[in-house]
Length: 562
Image (tube, rainbow, N blue to C red; front, side, top):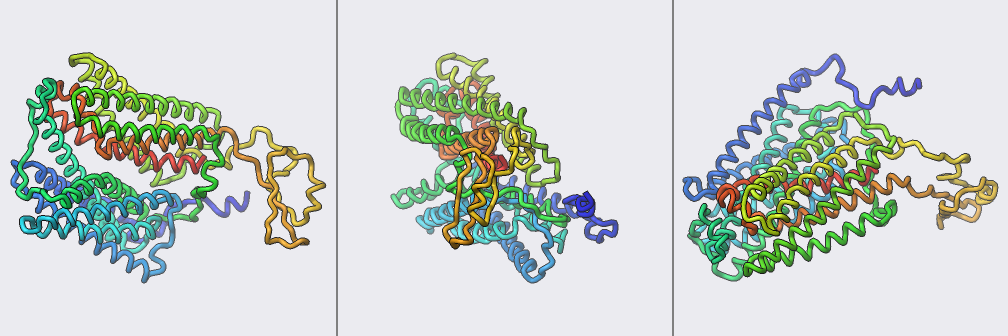
């Protein structure tokens, strides 16, 4: 008890004699937030204005702005790395909760795909260099440099609690975060315009009366002064459009990590305890019943088959399109229904979990919860618009019924999955849970230097395994009794986490790589008109796509914490 009192809490408030910079802590945060808001609003105005043909804002203006922002952010990152390298006391603490290894690994994976996209973009714009501005070729090159430097910066510095140049660091982090959000918005707008052009071309070439009726609202489809006629140009164009989802996720991953760094500027920590380790690939499924991973993998493979079928049939004849939509909605209904039941079962298991809730200050967890709740609003909005269109509109056929069931299950699945994830993130470590039937003799997890001592042990259950290191000598042999596998509740929670993780991955792949039944099914387009419905989907769907990938990251952390 005396040692606990002497050690004090893990995280203590600043001392009474605070430095002048810490007195201005809230003011420095306010200054950096105001800077970020103004830069982001200006970038959003220019990006959204450049998406419309009737607005006198050209895409070269957008590329010039993004290039300038990436150059400034790159210079600040280099200054930060140089300053922290030359000043050993610049980072006295590190936040062990910030940026776990799977988050940084995902950032590296998406960063590599972004670099490949930049190569395709450079090749695409170089195909007709004569009629394009040089900034269009310079932009992907600068973005590649920015991605490389930023990825290295976040890999080595994401856990920093820096204590020098506080106001400058806060402003620099917020500006870099704003740069990533601007890149994200530009990619979303570019992809949305590309999808709108594809569906406008499909509507203009169709003879189906319901699609002609939905086409009345029209959509902008301007002529391209530099047509992409060659085969290599079309390969580059299709390649970088298919890689846009990875660029979008990279920008959002980097933004979340930069926000946690911004929250940790000037933060005081008494210690940096570890909050869990990433399990090795060999032991990843050992503590499960295998039901969750196997069922999740089956749904993942089935989802890939549905995606391929949908992409092949949806642009064909009317009967093929109808069949593709029925298959797509049927798979989603089954998948969402199972995810809802599994999330509910996880919440029920927590009713019997006696681990204490973790109420310690954790900026990473606070951000995860806020992003889960905020990103789910996009899919909520699309689902409620679909419900109104199906219930109030006509005709009421099989496709309308599937659309209605899909929208209702989407709302239920987001709700119960959020409840499960948020409650899991606030649970204490597994060691905090008392055992139901503690053994009378502590015969689990013991190490003996003499193997003859094993014969004097009390009777132990047959589940522990005996492991003798081969490097030990005959007289120095070490016998290790490994503890039995985890509690059944923890194993169930691991199964649930892996099942939901795999399902969220396939539900991210479907819309991120072009499966958009919102435009192929004409129920909503007939009710709202193409222009309004396209605006709703193009604004809300990117948040729904981000929700899936962020849920994957959170569920991986839930698996480790279980």
